[in-house]
Amino acid sequence: MLTHRMLILMALFVLAFSGCQRRSAGQRDAEQAILAQERRALDRWAQGDPLGYLDIDADDVTYFDDIGAQSRVNGIEPMREYLTSLKGKIPPHKYEVVDPKVQVYGDIGILTLRYNAYATDGKPLARWKATSVYRRIRSEWRIVHAHWSLVKG
Image (cartoon, rainbow, N blue to C red; front, side):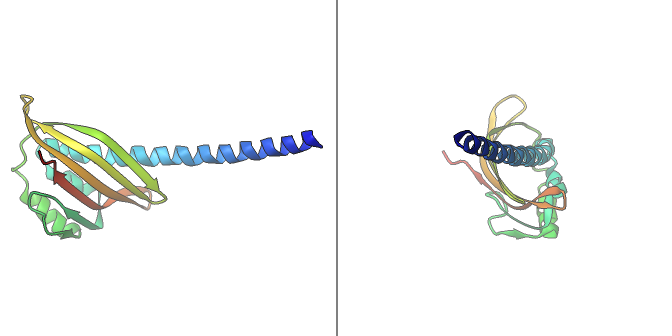
């Protein structure tokens, strides 16, 4: 009788554990997809092209920053106008993403990171902290809200 119970408990444990592994793999895939989306947009940004974010923004995106969007930007067309106004104002630079973290909750992913920009000669340009909220729309991760703030001090 004891052996039978132990076998049942072990089987339940294996089933529960294997289910957790499948969720973890899916979560890792979502985390990697979100980070890849963000890095593609940041690569374009560092080349002086802010419009890369339009490729990953949702139609209903909202946005704040410390440059020119102290009032919330609402929607993809106002976002296009805002990002277009930045063309030619972003110098090409090197960057590093510091301590990125993605938290996934079903079809929602929250990315937090720090962004350090450096001139091509290595001198620091700016340090930012950012939060981007992604939503899975069909099979793609899109930004529905982002907030970038300069690191003070």
